[in-house]
Image 1 (cartoon, rainbow, N blue to C red):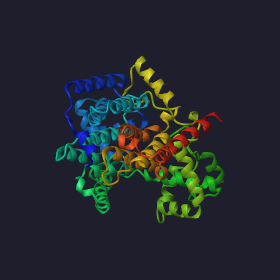
Image 2: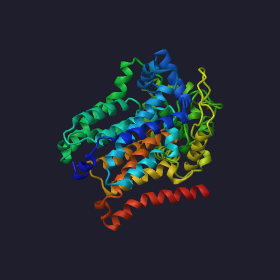
Image 3: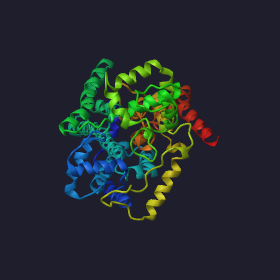
Image 4: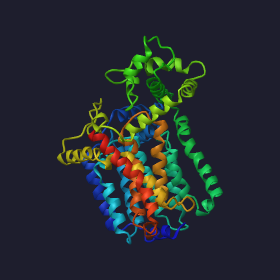
Length: 465
């Protein structure tokens, strides 16, 4: 591990003042959003937490955990407190990791932590918020671990594997951090780094299916959402029908009316205007014969350019790149109607935070594509593949996770990029002020800044045109 990492670990015990400040911020944050914003996804999850019967549409592990948290109270409040506890404990650890010698880095991390978008998303009960909080805690434990201090790394590894049960695309985010938790000798050479990465990927990849099996979750067909959306996109951009027969007249025209690069929701059974070709009437025919992935593979092979157009168009919306903000989903600022009557009381301070968050989403600071571009730039400045210091690991985690949505996403909501934004922000705060980085040649700084400059300027132009 680099000497810089050793400096980060120096004096890593939190002071009483920092702990008290953490508790105060947690209490204020919790009070603003009490008992937690419940979206449709969370409502379905809480229903399963109450019944004890899970399906795999949303992570059964989170539903099971929510069921255990009922000991501390009903509704979203216990899960909200868990999310906030993970988030602010992780933030405290990273503030400590920044060290007393880098006040600007610590200040930047603190400012990022209280950004309005982060406050709203962490005040919303979501698997994405729980996931981001868990990774923030795990990475903070690793960053503050002294040489030879194993317990922090072991706890971090456990948290990372647990977090991998929350998202089907968790491996890209968790892998660099789990590799960082391993002894430095395990990644001293590229062959060792490769072997360590393979070994670390195994428990991360197995975490979700094993958790689902252990909880006896029923198959919901959630994997069909991606298949159906991709088939719809391929049909839209190729002008042909690649769906199995459903008895719908003129499926090409119907699909063209249903498809949008924003999300797959028109193909789902919810919503005011579900598509005539959708999950309900495609589930059986897609599973017949060789199965849904055979349909998907055949369509991609027959129309590779149409598939690429669809994926790029959706990723453009998903990362809020060349879009108009009015066409994209807004943040959820209140609980959706639910049978238990959980809602948020009126609060002027929360309304101000929510208004600020919506305003930020209309600037480059709220566009995930800009954070991805910044992450790529940081890796140009300091990839640190072998030493994999904490800042580099955070950048790799953020970039790999963010780009995993290029082939795997079906919706465009900023919550999916909460971890990418947080991790890139921390990586930037720790990397940019460094003397060895600032001493790099100008051409490297120019190369690192090009991605961010291009996407930010292009995004502005697209919004005003």
